[in-house]
Amino acid sequence: MTSVEAVAQRPPWTADQSMVNGMAAKKVTITLDERQLDRVRALVEAGKAPSVSGFVKHAVGVALDDVAGWGALLAEALEATGGPLSDDERAWADEVLGVSTQPKRRAA
Image (tube, rainbow, N blue to C red; front, side, top):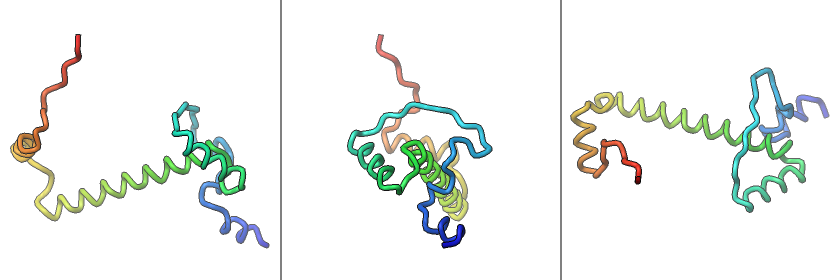
């Protein structure tokens, strides 16, 4: 098997198995549901993910790309329908939806 074939058979999150790939990295703590963590660890044990950290890094990348995609889709839809909401339109929508634009007060 050539190295190109080996890379093509790996899941996408295994392409970069190093902690730092030329970009600054920062260690953070996250909280996962125990079942989710068990499933991620099972993928690592089966060799389908390089590490828990590698899996989470890939998942965050996918989520960020997804958000960017939805943002682009929304911008396109707004452009096709007259652009972003005006202040008056936003105020009307907030009123209809019962959304308060006043800052929430903290309990004393």
